[in-house]
Length: 199
Ligand SMILES: C[S@@+](CC[C@H](N)C(=O)[O-])C[C@H]1O[C@@H](n2cnc3c(N)ncnc32)[C@H](O)[C@@H]1O
Image (tube, rainbow, N blue to C red; front, side, top):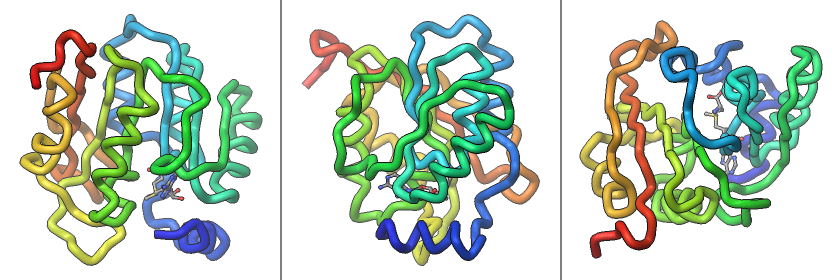
């Protein structure tokens, strides 16, 4: 979907994904894992930044990226209002370069927001933005929909796309926003170092 499409969704306030709170699965993950390694986290398709602020509260240098200028403006305003520190920048995660490679990358409703035909670009972008040895934490939305966004996916597709580059460290069904209960699957991947790559 184009930048114009997403910007219009913010301008017209047609934002059913906007729950006014971070992903419950992320909140629980950060609470249960207070001593995570690494310092930096990238949140692509960050929307108004609830998840970015949750990582910042957990002590990370948190960076939110979104294609829609209004999302970035709201992200900055709400972060300032919350008295937190995080960086926000407008860009196309699929096609642009990172400022530096990140220790963590957090996925939450970007994979299902892009066109399915762009999913190979998405995997390549994750590999560009994340350090070898870095962590890729994803809240995946397992819905059957083909006429999105949101576009559905399956565990099988996620395995096919990510297991060539990542080892799966943990997998669980998280606590969710009420209308997504039972539809989310969290996958915590560890990106292989070049010498660990098997093919
Ligand atoms: C469904 S919303 C989810 C927002 C946020 N993750 C949340 O859960 O509240 C998808 C977001 O991805 C952004 N987006 C779509 N394509 C993008 C791209 N190629 N690069 C960066 N952001 C993108 C949209 O502007 C929108 O804010």
